[in-house]
Every structure is written in C-alpha cells, then in structure tokens.
Image (cartoon, rainbow, N blue to C red; front, side):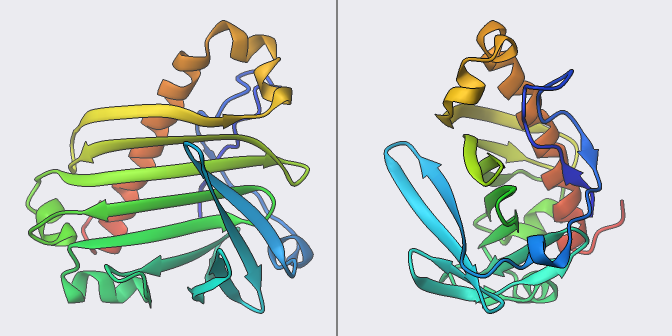
Length: 207
C-alpha cells in the first residue's frame, strides 16, 4: 500500500509530505521482539511484535496481517482484534487501526461515530478521528505527533495537532527550527487524506 513518507527533515522537504511505496526485506518486516513506542504527552506505550502477534505493554492485541510493505491490525470497541471485512458488517461505533513497519514507523488511529462509523461516513457525515504517529531513524525514535479531527468524505474540521516527541536530531535541524508548526500542519493534511481513502476502503465505498 502507499506509505506516507517518514518525516526526516534531513532531505529537501525533510517532512512527511506525500505517499510512496517502500519495500523492506522479510528480515526488516518481521524482526522478532521489535519494539516501538507511541507517545501521548507524558505517557509512553510500548508495542512489540513477536511470532506474528502485536503486543501492547505485554498484552496481546492480536495477530497482524501484511498489506504491501506494511503490517496492520484492527481492533474493535473492546480492543479485540477483528478482520477488516468485519468492520462494516458489524456496524462498529468505534475501531482502531495499527499500521506499522517495525523500527520504521507506527501509526495508531481511532475512528468513532455514535451511529456507526461506516454508516455515518457513507452518509457524508463527520466521523471522529484520532491519530498518534511515531517515526524512527535507524530504529531510534525521531519524532512523534498526534492529532484529532472530524472527517467526512469531502471535508475535515476541528483539527487539533501537536508534537508529542521530537528527538535531538530533528529538533536541532534548520528546517525544523524555521517552521515546525507549518511542517506539522502539512503532515496532518496528508494524513487526513490517507485516512479518508482508508475509510472508503474499509467501509467498501467507491472512490
């Protein structure tokens, strides 16, 4: 699947500004005991993969699947792993998607709507979206951001975003020092578009 570029700020744009396909070897995609962190203010959550299973702080979330260069897992309202095809059929009011490439990036997004996420989105109404994203360089945390927004098939509103963690390599770069908030704003716009397309796919709507 198209993979949003890792925000490096060490290249020309040095930012997550689009989508590209990146291929990793099986060793990179399936490193045993690969650990990734998700940041939320002062809270740090550890995610680990082992034996085809994704763990959250040592608790099993479920078995992940492959999609292109990424690994992914869906959980329902109770935090139990569920198949993508079951989401629209079950009419879930809330579900979470974990999309990750071990030691490269980790995206955790929660969708919610009181009338059912897919039903609400299909009707052109807004659903609630929350995302936490962490990017890595050479397996070390580089940066993490989060945002919340209301998203429909054609618009977005109430967007609130912030950096959760910025490593020294990024924090001291000229590009980051010159326009950190502009960089984050552009990144979030691209992410919202990614989620809009993702919801169309999950809810089995025509693009």
